[in-house]
Length: 257
Image (cartoon, rainbow, N blue to C red; front, side):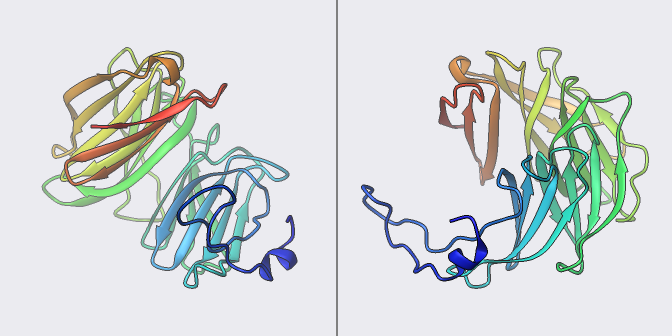
């Protein structure tokens, strides 16, 4: 089922073969085939692609009818994989591997447009994780970008949403090579960090001092040595859910913190 023409006529599936319980209710093909990160805003789903026939693609899907999702717009630049995405007020912020951070205007979902890209020569080699939020006493909006190979957290003030100025830089513990994912709430940043091999940890960061450099609050070494090189985190209240894996073997699991 590789074409939209076939998928458009599919009857929604109630259950997966051999699996008890709910299953998929709709499907749609996208241009490349390696979706790696998602962001949901209202009835639009932003799908960032890691690679395939066209590298570094962003697909925008209308999911107002979840049984019939449809692609309404795409953005591609062929430069590098997109490894993370955050969407805020009509702007998509892409953790764009070797490109660093890419800013795309998505105010018109059917016609997304490149606005700016920013690579930090003193930071991580590859942009991997991204999040947005309002922090500090002024409640200013920021985009946070974490990377691979030189784990630094770059924080860009996006009060002017079309400009990427000089970042404020925070460096996690020296044990970290990578920032794997980022979650934020109430002036606290939660960084999932790792050494690229057998160690993974969680570091909490005080974002209230912004625009001054954030400070470290605490850290936790995680018991995931068997599959500690990859992960995603989601924060719900005072609980952090961590899905992690070793990308070479795909062995993985779930931790609740």
